[in-house]
Length: 69
Image (cartoon, rainbow, N blue to C red):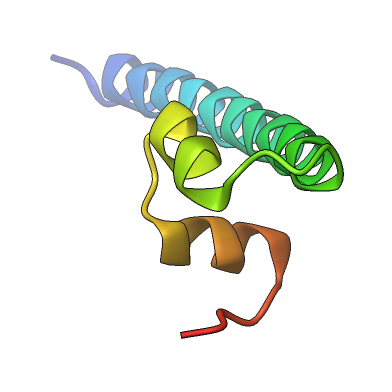
């Protein structure tokens, strides 16, 4: 494969990675927003964690809260 072809592939992969990073950032922000809404609605933390596929500590970390444990 020529140098130019390899460099095109590298640039393409870098663009895909940047898009994936942005998508992850947006999804994390949405998850944070919905988890906050669930907390305000008094949904049990264990249920929020289960639905989010995270641990209770993961939810505390996501929300920037201290755990009570």
